[in-house]
Length: 351
Image (tube, rainbow, N blue to C red; front, side):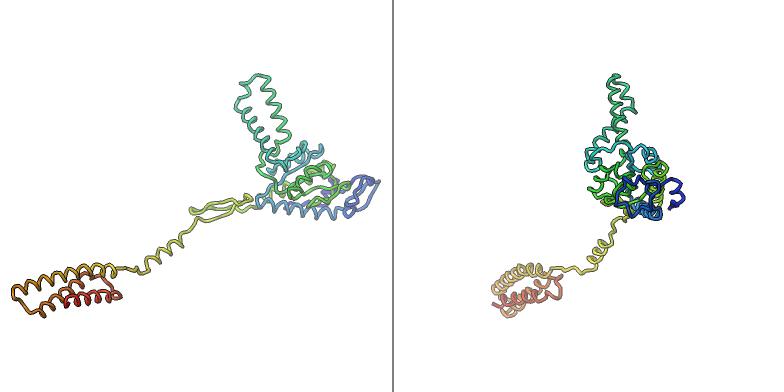
């Protein structure tokens, strides 16, 4: 990470505070002393605190976060705008509109209006209107551009707010704290550091000092972007975003479990319920055998054929053979049902 040295801070005038009569007692731990009724800020504390802020910003950006640059005072406008554009982050350098964060949905409607006007200006729609109508739309577009031009690409609330002069940006600071957005701020000796998450004690009026702060934050943002891991995709992979909009690498759903279940189904023996059906089919066959036996008995009795005992034996044997042939596919477990059917047929034949 690009480090800022104490010499650079001294040359930029970071150590100069406000007049002693305007001081805030809560800044006493960061004041080295006073000279000519002006407080001198202790750079031995400012330097490591600024380093911690840069590290925090870098980590947030590396995770896909956004940093909002806020500097509406004249001495900070140009530096904050240039550094925010250099690192590709949103910024507010004109008047802070109340509700920019807490009423972001309404702000988004104004941003959409600005983008529509820009599109109409680019495709020549204004030229087809009267001079009065075109002039009114151009003035509206310029007004929206001044107040919302820096955040028109910001699709959601920022993850970090970096601001200069907490007294000047009091409304922005309150909105950020209300929404739980971390704040990195330059705090001078006349301000309170209570509501700031990452305090950087220093001069918030000198243009050189402000450019030093903004440049350091912009460098941290660029390093954070460079450290984002590149996700390489294969043929069976895709990228999905989480709730915070961060990319997560996922593989296409695998079908191992389904293939295992299919293999288990193939290996598992099938239970064939053939015996009950065979037994049901054996019953009508046994009845038919009884009828055939009775007809044969009557025929032999009329013709003086074989003895009744022989007729009964032959009829029982035919019934048993018919029952056996009716259930050829029955398993060994269900053979008892077939035997019972055969016994029943024999008993009926004897009777």
